[in-house]
Length: 381
Image (tube, rainbow, N blue to C red):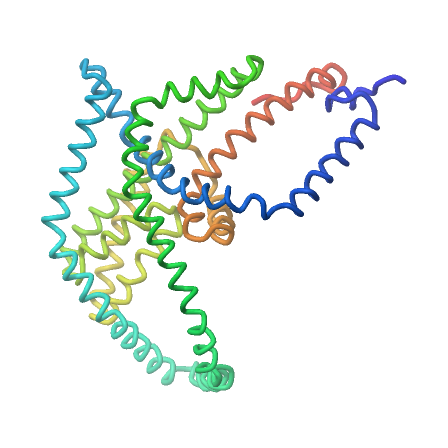
């Protein structure tokens, strides 16, 4: 039986080969679904190890260029790593000791007063709605809420019934956070010290035929993810500093706390700034309409500087992703993995994109091999 060109293209001999492969894949999925409970210990171990490893890789991409810089001045890699870790630890300790009292005071005041700010803003909006053309709709909305939330107390009781389980989850999360914080410096040290050796060792485990492909994929991942993490954290830090200066100039309360919130949330592109500005808007509205106007000016200036000067220069080497793609990735990752998915969604997408692009390049080459002469070559660019 003559083998068709399509079967050669997919790597088989005849149609029976393709059907057998599909059947085996289906059987494998069915068996995995039936014995999934066997992998629960693996999942627990994986979930315990992953957080400190992720933190270590983020720090690795930030610090590895500095280690290479010190090596150029004939400082041994081990000593360079120790100097950097001790220097950063000392710097962070000093910053925390100097700024902790002010931050602690602002955080306490903000936590205590924020419900009042929200209530005052809600009362203001309610008063405005009641005296506007929306007044009839307000009454309808209020009646709907009264009807549908009349059993709110029973719902709260049902929710509190699972409080013990909630406390267990919180305790488990806190334990994982503490473990991650205390273990990731050790992982970081060995990543910086033996990262290249570990990469070469993993490549040697692969058959020689696939080592070049795997090395190219790892290199592309390193460039894409590394440049993204470095750029995003630097941009977020710049946004936090600029907002802190702006908040101080306009006299907004809780300036340093709001700036820190903005810096942390700005790590998440597009959605982060919208989350960051929300508490600042509430505080500004309660303060005065003039303060809200000043806040709008500060945010407009910071966003202009970030969009036209900071990001183009810092993020120039990183991957280009369409804003719609970023939003879809963040929403999907958030629904699948929660806050961790939102934070790591874009780096994960970068890794997946590198793999898919490389495989698609191989697909184009294979297509040109079997169909290029007759139907025209597949454009590789």
